[in-house]
Amino acid sequence: MYDIAIIGAGPAGASAGLFAAKAGKKTVMFDSGKSITAKAWVENHYGVEPIEGPKLLETGQKQAEKFGAELIKTEVKSIKENGAMYSIETQQGTYEVEHVIFATGMSVKLAEEFGLEVIDGIEPRVAKIIKVDEYGHTSFPKVWAAGTVAGVSVHTIITSGDGAKVAVNVISELNGKRYVDHDIMK
Image (tube, rainbow, N blue to C red; front, side, top):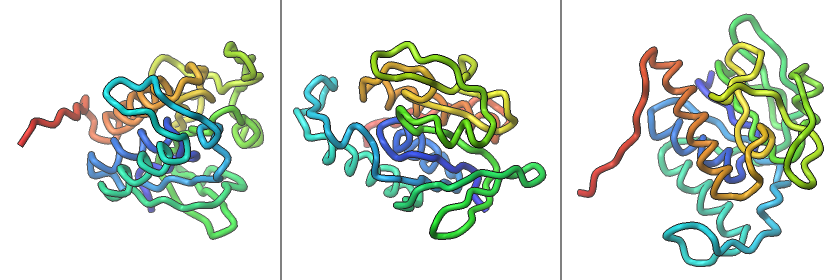
């Protein structure tokens, strides 16, 4: 059983995975390999040298894994409510989770099949998004969305920050008090 499952391991998903795992939450990230960041050239991140999209994805995923997030390279086929939990079905098996974060980039297909409310997108080339509140929470209990699929700008640095924000909100809910992650130089 996982505390948090993240569907998508691009900038928003891997960032959410990094914060969740670093906070000690049992975290799994599912990567379909379809992130649009895989086609990107990125040279607009503060404090980071220019980087190819695939390398940025790999670096972010490895950061999340460093803190204990499990990365499973497979596509999620379906999600089902299972009492107070959710069952995530993939080609590699079924995973029981307490919280789900959708970080599926420009794809709302799985969210629609699951029954989440989907609305028109506002970014160019982003037709539909998942309806969320300011915390990234959907209308379903313990189901969240982050990044482009939640209506946040498609820019990788912004989606990364949104993934972190949503993860902090999920961690806070799990802990029953506001969570803050702030490292200090050693």
